[in-house]
Length: 115
Image (tube, rainbow, N blue to C red; front, side, top):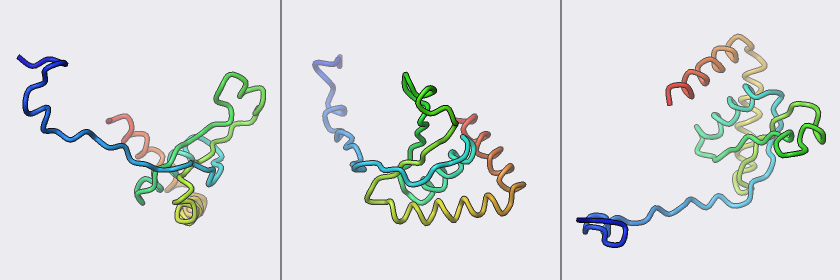
């Protein structure tokens, strides 16, 4: 019988999962709200760029230090130039077509609810 101290042979043959090294994350862009931030992060992820949404209001003194909502999009420093192009293109597309942006936000929300 296999246990933590004595795994069976199939468990021993599996290679350990190696984490992906993304390097240092830097702020690429500031989004106006959470929906825009989510859509911009999705654009990065579709292009194979890791992205994180960071709110300046997070943390124990965030609301005091940053009374205005804002959402920074962070990407690995090595991908910054490519991410900036993608983020600016997606932001321009969202602002050019507000109705399309609303549909995209609904689709993004439905996608996250289904997972």
